[in-house]
Length: 294
Image 1 (cartoon, helix red, strand yellow):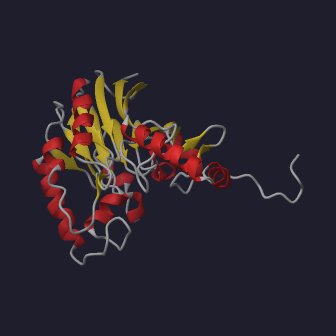
Image 2 (tube, one colour; image 1 turned 90 degrees about the vertical axis):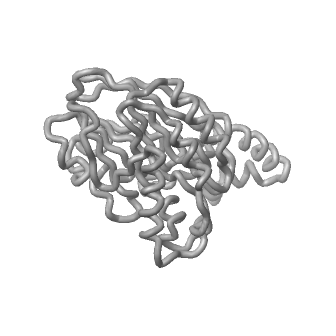
Image 3 (cartoon, one colour; image 1 turned 120 degrees about the horizontal axis):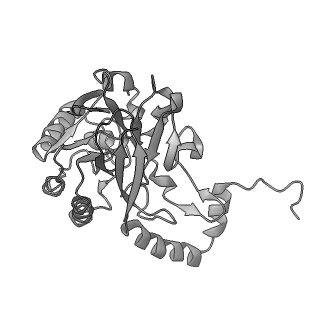
């Protein structure tokens, strides 16, 4: 029986209790490291109003290339994606997890191997801005006064690798499909309205690194794809995610969720890791969506 003066049970208290001993920490560390690098392909189906013919889209997010992820991991993710023969490849941000003075040169030949007839598109995430040197950070090191120039230089390198970055803008990738992408929500200028401004009567697909943009959608969106949360990265039986980096707690942790105007959205568990190279009960995923019109 719990005493009346016992402290409340929280996710953080449970985690501290489970990891209180060195043996428990070591057990989770070994198993968690193995889970961090064993990814799967998640296949989903959904309707996208306005589509006149089916579309197969692959969604990869949160690569976190750098500290814990090297070219070999990216190569495996790209191989798995190409094997699905997608029409369109979408990248959900947090490509980079490097100090602001380092170059991710080895990343680009791997991304250049992605194959999709409608192209490869992406958005920036908060770790990318740290890697630009937007601010002082544990991951990105010291802030750089030329961070905007570094962002533009990296934008050009991604473009040479075949990846088009969308920053509060969009374009028609097919006569019946408008793809929009918003800037990272934590930069405080994410603008879904601008990203979707040219959609007209086309089906709408929106990329946002952070799902916290979902309650702020200006109108109904056909489908929004997000990452950022890693599904919590470390999940425990009966407890769920120990921590979700969202102002809405676990509301948008992973999977199918809903934004403003009953807009459907899918939040991927992502592929890399942040903070520690460990996952638990939260498999990394390449998401493949088969989309059809109503």
